[in-house]
Image (cartoon, rainbow, N blue to C red; front, side):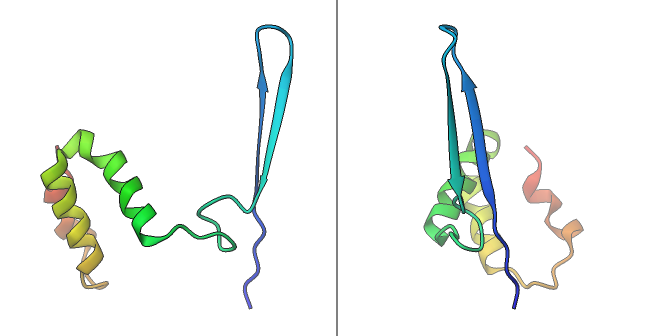
Length: 82
């Protein structure tokens, strides 16, 4: 059985000299707290639509969701160019 524990922490220092530390055990996207498929799709669109445009980003996402796992990366490059 694969076990994995992931933590994330951030320390923010403010101009007034105060600071705040935030610690998250098992942040979203870890084995213990996986992202839903809808959340994955939303993140993909957020990261790609500005580069490819909404239509091409949605087409790429659909292709990736439905592609044969034996597809070669070189066959996908045409969809990734802006």
